[in-house]
Amino acid sequence: MNWLEKWEKKRDRVLVMGVLNLTPDSFYDGGSYPTQRAAVNRALEMVDEGADIIDIGGESSRPGAAPVSEREELGRVLPVIKRIRKQSEIMLSIDTTKATVAAEAIACGTTIVNDISALRSDPGMARVIARNKVFLVLMHMQGTPRTMQHDPIYGDPVREISGFLQERIKVALGASIPCQRIIVDPGIGFGKKLEHNLVILQNLNRFATLEVPILVGLSRKSFIGEILGSSAEDRLTATIAANAIAVANGANIIRVHDVKEGRRTADVACRLRRRNAQDK
Image (cartoon, rainbow, N blue to C red; front, side, top):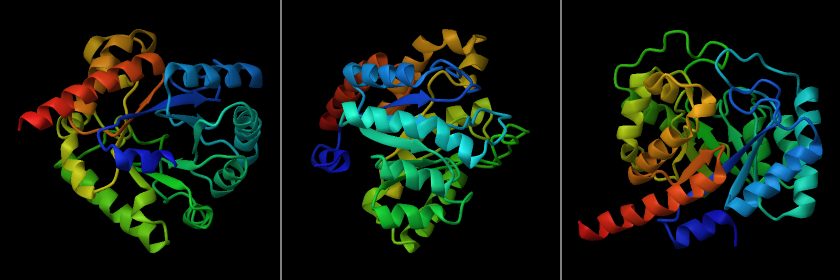
């Protein structure tokens, strides 16, 4: 039984996706795993801490980040994916916009493709996902990582983002990717100002109309730093608070750097969400 089937059987289960960035320039943990062994050890540690999924990335998507070559991205992620798969059955996700990287990662045991471009970057991505029958995360982003924070503008952020995700779901369905294998991510921090992120978080339950699981990634992001005036290293407690709100407002998956804290946050907030639903 795969994780989505388990989630369907118990729809109030909130999954924790642990972040494993194999990049030198990610905003928080870039360069933290200089060797394959260090990366694999961190992955296994996240499994012990309660991760349901590990999301592996070889190209930074921080604001202003430049793209990397397909060859470089493959060299970063494939050896680590292979070594993790030999030691654990944890669900693996590949964070990429490149169809070839996705295909190679799938061949090594990855079953989720986390595409921040929502199938817009590589015309071959949809075919790879459909052919291999894996899961797909469709994320909203205004612009590209290099340009996304250059004065993003919205009228109604939730309505516009929901409309975008609905359109990308239709594209995925048209490419023979079934709805049961689609996940959406409103893209907090990707082409959004502070107020946009807060509105999305406050109104997360409105994305439930898309009728697919909702993934939220807000771990240690800059909007938290704007509120607190703190660095990424000092945003853990605020991340816990924001994730609790995300779960209370309908998140099905939270993407986090700090898995132990994320697991506990998800479990407590989910229990409260279930209790509130029973009282209504």
